[in-house]
Image (cartoon, rainbow, N blue to C red):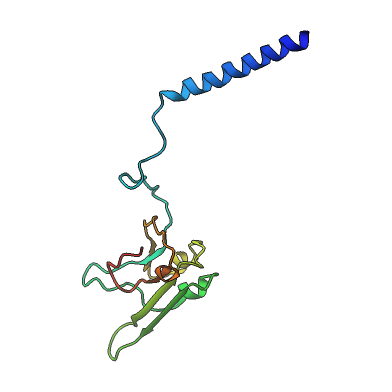
Length: 146
């Protein structure tokens, strides 16, 4: 008989604790956002895919095609090429592609760039079902990667 009353007491206590948690959180602001209409505020240290920094004058990439980022990448997802025109002080970038399907977002490419030509983007909504959408040509400015 005592076991019966003990079960009623522990069940009532459990119910009271559960109701207290519900009441405590019922009047707080919701954590979720209405996704298509609202977006989350990204932290300052958010790492998206890499992108090329451009010079203020002319909008040309700062990259000199030294291949340091390509050699530093453990995933092998960066491919770049450049040519040195006659009389030019440095190489001109002709190809810079990123295979984002294999990128591990480790940041070694950004750290290895001695010319400060790479940075992390703030793109976070890169959902797609096509593999081709993640073969990014970083040389073309303003291209939307979706």
